[in-house]
Length: 135
Image 1 (cartoon, helix red, strand yellow):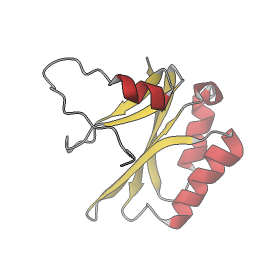
Image 2 (image 1 turned 45 degrees about the horizontal axis):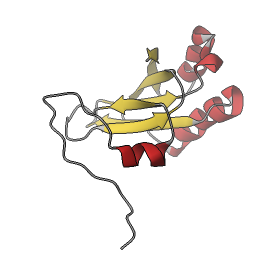
Image 3 (image 1 turned 45 degrees about the vertical axis):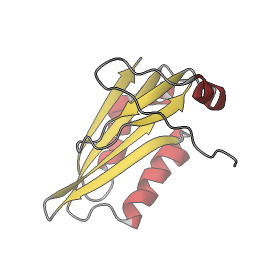
């Protein structure tokens, strides 16, 4: 049978290393590690970048709309010319929503204050944080 995934059971009480077979498939030198608040999963996104940019947006309730995603795409792909490595969005009942986007091309985020203003201009965005995650 043809294999479609690689799986290993690992101990979390010591450093985790990837099996050799995965290194042959991935062919990237680094990975973005994401652990959601629930702690129920650990995500790795292969990248050759040594720095990743995280943009966190807090939105009013029901802010994760098609219009919101169109505007994020307009800014990231259209104006900045960057591809999204990973995104996550979550709404908390009737209170607020949070969206996180991770991007590989940190050099395109040099003018962080100007980029922050672009995201703040999206309807429904209450606050913006930009974080540079380094290896």
